[in-house]
Length: 350
Image (cartoon, rainbow, N blue to C red; front, side, top):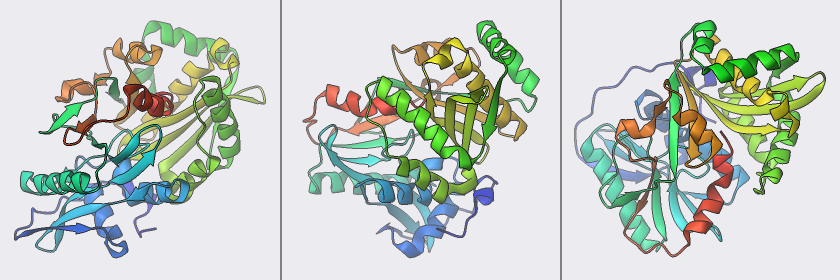
């Protein structure tokens, strides 16, 4: 791991002046890891998934091959692109930034640096004869030569530091369900020691939805690599765990990512209670943004988020409906059905 602690990862880092000199593109080497993270932590478009710890988690858990590159000018990193080669029967053979992640893509200080990495990735796509190049940008418009994926939208909201104000901002029917859960004496616990209880609920939920279950090693590796940037929360009915979440913390953003629960959770209003406890914890912890993640159009999660006046849909940030773009440089030989199957787990994270 780099010397950056989880606490540092959640603190603002002063922005360095834009460097001058010729631009050079490099493949990431192990000695570049700390410089990479420092750039990500101070860049406005940097996300949880741009950090080196995400690379280590995927390399330890799956067979994805990292092909991270960065641009340097005057001895300073001015752009990064976390990219993996992914190859399986569901998605084909592709370069993705980043797999299993809501966000990815290029973080750059200026247009020249961004264009240099973009052209490099396009060239790599041609040379490696991939089915497509996918950049999950968190902001900005659709890049030239790419097409947007219209199936998903991402939602976030600005948090008040006052939990009571957050509660008052929720729809009336949601507040009713939260009160119902509180009257049923549901309660929460949080901490990394609850990983096994979370994983049991997560696996039950995924199997019920007919979705392949990620290995437990994924979550153990997340805790090992990210430390206090991972929050594990369980909702109990009496002594029985009924709903759970693993959330990511980056700077001032709280991002619930993996959700699990028993079928009975719905009747107990445990899911609404879970989301309220997550929001309350984020507000009390001083978070400014609550990231609900992405949802597939036509689902109940999408309808709920889309109807909430306080939620900001990513389309309002000039990115058409999705943060995913595919490079239209090579033919897409896999069916849309296969691609959707690969995304079902992601859709169920929120």
